[in-house]
Structure formats: structure tokens, C-alpha cells
Length: 495
Image: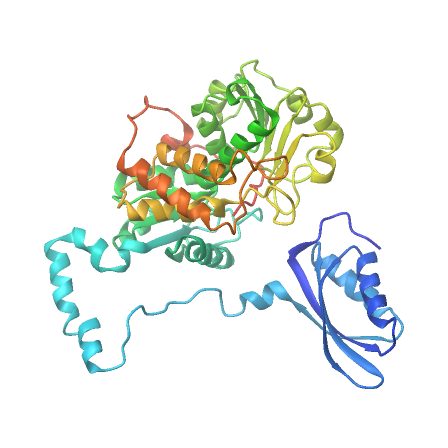
């Protein structure tokens, strides 16, 4: 009994087992787990007596059903007593993942009088006289709202606000861990554009930035555009811009590996939702040779019926040869494939039909658009969104440093120049002398990343380039969300 899916730490379980105390007992346990397709990550002896050993066996499985199969295999072994099974992911989430902690001591009446009444009144009056002082004297200088309506949670779809909360908590924890930014989940029980905009506008005075998260396309385009017009703090939709930044960084280094220029390559993007649209717009602005956008309606081409404004703009500004066939046909001869869509859309044979020294970014999670093991047989560089595969494309490489830089610069908006600067900073952290087919992005735990990104964004904010010509791209068209939403593939999970 095996599984074809890849085991992951996201489905890690710890099994408490009583086993007969003989020389082969532990070996039988680990062999059984391996034969079941799981990966043993730890084995600890908890207790023992002359006849029995109690162990905690921890292993990564592929999904909940696979975990059940592993437990059943162990239970079937002679002399084995499975006593308890713990899902380590659920254990980690008990009680939530973040909390509020005071930065100042409140040990006596003197300290209380300065932190709260009567002393705090003086600070309130100072801010009332000069509202800009809120950045200096309150949490506003270092606080971001992580806002969602729960309509596009990971790759799971419209789960609603309560079910989105674990993701937003995780995002807040990542902000703090990697950028030193205090972030807080704001989950909204509405999916009405104007109501979302109104709520966020009303709470904005407490925050130095707004991070939009897991809001479905095309609604996300209009929400972002309206908030940018209304607020004097940066508004950043991570599913769009965070993903685009990291993809551009990874592609920069991947092209260095294969010795190609962005201006000379043909790129196929599967998934023309929020992430895919932002990726394509950033690549177009960097001078990519050509792009074919592909979604459930097929290849976006001029003449495509029943399209929305976002897809219409892409059809008119990409796909020079007006290709209208299927996805395997689109990638035939292409240099780069970028998937931000759905699992198992392509095979290894499809990748074999790409150009020599091809690049594959299959970012759907947990299962990519093509099995990375098969893709690596034919492509020169392969990346996924998975932490257990080389070249993980993960938004955490971007958003903590981007917000750190914007907050430090007291930026009032997020700009294209910041995105390009952040992407270049991420790419450069690896170093041209260090890159190779399995190392095109730095580790998410590389302490240099957030610092480098923050510095680049801060410089871009303080010394902006001349504004480019007006771009009628999807993120700039508020009427997009007012249109009927065309069906899009489930988004990749790069959070």
C-alpha cells in the first residue's frame, strides 16, 4: 500500500505505540511506515519495561487518508499496540497562533499613570493637533491589517471568514518572524466590494499598511484599486504582488542558469486570476518576449467570447500569434511555464515538448500542475510552491521585507518600482556565483532576505523613478469587479 502523492510536514502525525521489547521491534515499525509511503522524521522512546517499549513515532504523510492508512498498517503488525494518534498541524493551531503582548512595563501606579490615564491624555492631544504624530507615538508605525473576505482561501475556495482565520493568523506570525512587523487578522463577514472598502477605510487610521489576502478575482482588483485611491497608507494584495515579485526574482536567476534573456523567451502562464495577472503584468513591464495566458476558458486570445475586462486586456496585450489551442499545445516550444492554477494539468511528456533548457514553475499547492519529479527529467530548472522540494516559490520571501521597507519609509502607496526593486533584491541575495538549477531563490529562513528587500523598497519609496505611461491593466480598472466574473482555475498556494 503506497501513495503517489508527496508526503508533507503539513500532514505530519505522531503515533504513540506500544511494541514488544525485542531487538527488531523498532526496525519493523520504521519499515512498515516506509513501505506505506510515509517518511519517518522522529522516533522517541517514551517509556519501557522488561516486555514493552513505548515510542512516539512521527512521520510525514501525503494527506489525511494516507495518514489513516499508515496507522492501519502499523495496527496490523503483530505485537504492536497503537495507543494514540496526534495530528501535529491541529495541535499547533490549538488556541490560535498569535497573541498581543505589551511593550512597556506596568508594574506600579507610576508606570500605569504614564501608559494610561492621566498621562495618555497628553499624547492624545498631541496627535489631535498633529495627526502625523500617530506614526511616531502609536502602533501605527509598525502595524499592518491582514484583510480578507474568505472568498479564496489558499486553493480551497470560498470558505468564508471564520475558516480563513487560521491562514490570516499564520500570515501575521510570518510578518513578525521575518519582518518584525506587527500584523493582525481582519476577517470580514461580507463579500460586497463597497462594504469591504468602507470597513477597511474606517479602520485604517490604526494601521501603517493594508495587506489584502485571499480575496477572489476579479473582486480583489476593484477592492485594491478603490482603497489605493482612498487611503494614504500602502495597500498591497499579496496574492497578486507578493507572488509576482517572487516569481520575477526566481525567473531572473533561472534565466541566468540557462543563459537566456527575458526579452527573448516565450512564457506560458496557467491561471489568469489574481496571481497570474500580476505575474504577467510585471513580466510585460520588464520586457518579456511573449506570453500566452491560459485559464479554464482556454488560451486567452483576441476574439475569445464571453470574456471579462481583465482577460480582454491580457488577450490584447499578450499572445502575439493569437494561439487558441490547449495547454500542452501552448507550452510546445515555450521557454518558460508558470502555473498558478490547478494540479496535474501536464505530464512529463508535455514538458519534453518545451524548448531546450526550459524552465518550469509549477506552483499549485499541495499538488503542482505537473509532477516535479517528471518535470525534472526534461526541464533545466524546476520550481514549486512546496517546502519539501528545491526552489520553493514562497511569498514569505517578499511581503515581510516589502512592508518593512514601506513602513520605515512612511510610504503612502505601493508602487511598481518597489515590486521590481524587491524582486531584484531577492534574486541578488542568492548571488550569481551561487545559483544553479536547484538554487534560484534563497531560503525563506535566510536572514538576509527581508533586510535586503526592505532596503530596496525603502530606497524605491524615497527615490521613485519617473512615473510610467498610464497602463490600462486589470489592477487599474475599477470596472473589472463590476463585470461578471469569468470562471478561473483555483489559485496556487504561495502564501
